[in-house]
Image (cartoon, rainbow, N blue to C red; front, top):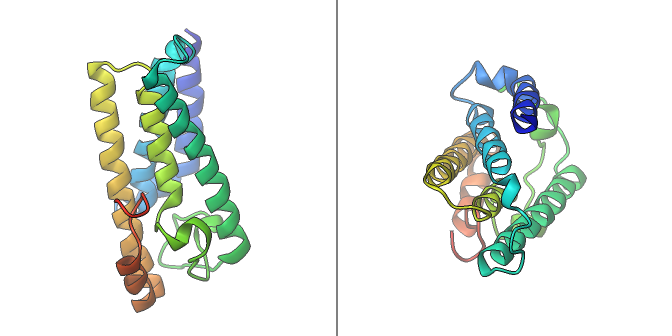
Length: 182
């Protein structure tokens, strides 16, 4: 019962946070909403299994992914805040102010990957998934991964439009989510 209550409360928050983006399927925030929901469902479904057999290899891998997720979100958010600045983007009114960076950031994790915040969400989702693998969770992690790829591609289109050839060049020099791999 508590998990259903948490799902409803968190979903209301995500809808509120994403309300402008949900009205525009061409905005990256539209797809990000579904990433948030899938992660929430995975966490809530697997919550009873988080500390069962904590030293099992799958659990250790899960904790590693969850730790990487925390590191990546803190590092990337602080780098964007420190170096990115803020700009009004009239053509993207559904964005939150913190999303509208004025300068391209290529330091920290951004030197190696274009989307460390989305990588963080992928790692969070996969970390939660590995706590207890079921058919439903396999479907959810597939959908989550698909939506993370879509949101990254949509945001890249927005960034090329805003930053121009500099961002297109940056895309050629960096990976999408994982340094040297993907």
